[in-house]
Image (cartoon, rainbow, N blue to C red; front, side, top):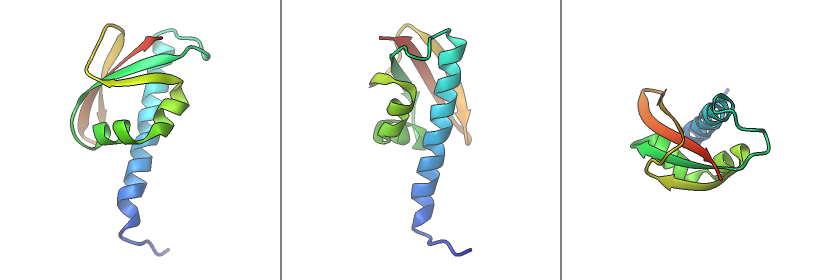
Length: 94
């Protein structure tokens, strides 16, 4: 296999987006939300995870998120460790 060195940042971002989507889906389930419930997401952290949360709209599409905001609010929250980066996510029904 031959990979371009330029494809790795994009690949890492898409891997992080999939990981974040999976973690948020798990949080939805743990919070007792129905599959059709729309949610809002808040986050606190820094680094690549936060960059991907802000930039990759597929995350919101994949978890029925209507609003994504920096900062935390009342809801179901969890501190996640993703590839050595810590990010706190909170989810609540809209």
